[in-house]
Length: 135
Image 1: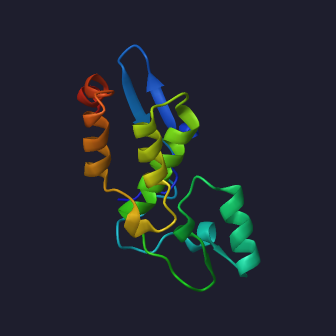
Image 2: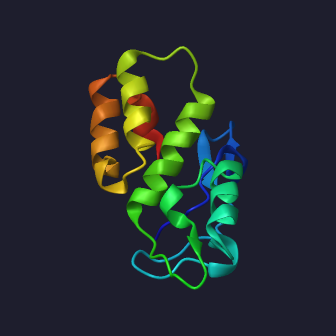
């Protein structure tokens, strides 16, 4: 499943239980299936570019000119994760900046996989405790 709309507004955190919940999966699509054309397709390239700018946290390959379908990929969520980290993290190390930049690659084939993101974070020794609490 690809969430396609991973952003801070769609994460609910319960501090009492130290648990995060992903909410609002309305744009989600099974991997390899067509993503919602009503949400991601526009009439012309000018409108596509405007949407990309407005919703920069979404992967650029999500947007297309009607009727060109776009299939959901894991790389789309990696881009959203990079945008989320970019928005939330401040004064980070050069290693973390490089990871965020790699997640935000325009070319989805150059983005890391989720396993690679986790391995990078673990190698930075920043999130061992947090990763143990992810369910």
